[in-house]
Length: 173
Image 1 (cartoon, rainbow, N blue to C red):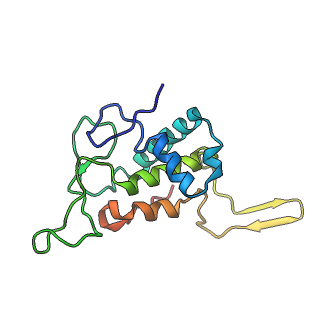
Image 2: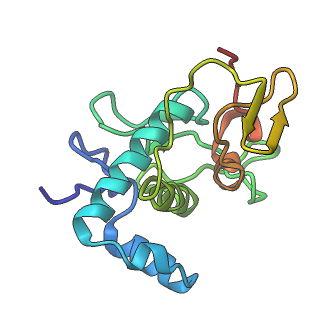
């Protein structure tokens, strides 16, 4: 089934914030050969996984309010402030249009998609490992060391669209 991309209207069946064509352009401009090597079906699946990850990770952190109660995804939104633009009335901010998915959100979705094409974005995490030995190599991890991946580049891309300028709550298991 063809990927349904959110276009800013608040689609009830949208599956991704960015189309395969736009993701292809984004990665081509950055010389990313891994994305180019994927077929269309794999790209669509990766974009769906990336969008699902964004919903799970950022749903409660987005600035503003969902445009409609029936839209499938978290964007478009009302009252998501544009922190990069001075304006509005006195100290009131300008807001992102409620008829678009901001380019930064689309690009973050693409970045997560290329990662999703190679690995699980949100793998199950088992018991915390304190020490590992493989042959002659031994590693001891610090108490409380993170046992899962963190996507700092994506978090930085999305920071302008989150409440508090990008502070995402971290919960320990």
